[in-house]
Each structure stands twice: as structure tokens, then as C-alpha cells.
Image (cartoon, rainbow, N blue to C red; front, side, top):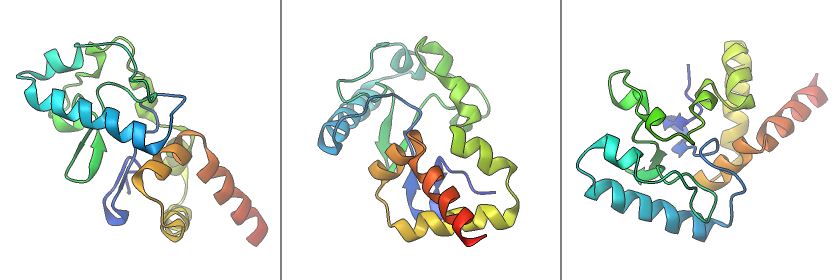
Length: 152
């Protein structure tokens, strides 16, 4: 099953549930680059995850980094053999790891409908920023559901 947070086949990754009230792309990337520099300077994951509890001015979490063309949280349990360091940040909304609305619905869809959604996303030719924002505000889901309804 595809992971909507890290869609390798579409070269998309998502930071949508890692903040709110996002500003423009340039400001987001500036803040994420700052996070990434701080991550590389940090000797321990725990010290990185606890260095601040504030969102960046762009609205993104201070823990979101960019590496190898992907956005990700270095505290995510998938990177630590199941150990979850996101709880070190009291503002982390790790409960969202169960997913944004789209993620949750996607898990319950048939393989066929999942493929339709992935094909739909692919057809949009989104960059990582736009994908993240549209996943966060449910606009991709709404547009997809509208399309499915029209073709039914």
C-alpha cells in the first residue's frame, strides 16, 4: 500500500500535518532549511526534538527537515525502528500520524480506488509544497471525491 506521506513513485512527500496557517513557499522553504541546518548540527535526536516548541513563522513545525528531496520529521518512529521521538516535542500533533482525513480514508479504500487517487494526484503534477498544503486542507480529497462522483 502506498504511503501518502512519502509517495516515492510520484516523488512527493508531505509536511501537511506538521504545522498550520502556512505562508508562501519561499518562507516555508527558508524555515525548513533552517530546521535542516539545526538538525545536522544536533548530536542527538532528543536534543533536536526538544530545542523549541514554537512553530516557525511560516507555520511549519520546527522539526520538519528536507533531505534527499523529501520532507520528513526526524523523530518519526519509521526512522528509529519503532521508537517515537515526536513525543519529546509537547506541541507535536503526532496523533495526526493516524493520518489526515485523506490518509485515513485512503487506508480504508479498495486497491482500485487507491490507485484511482494516486493516478489523480499524478495527473495534477504537484510539487511537494502544493501537495502538502492540499493534503492538509483536504482540497485534493474534495476534488477527487467530486471527480469520482461525476464519473459514477
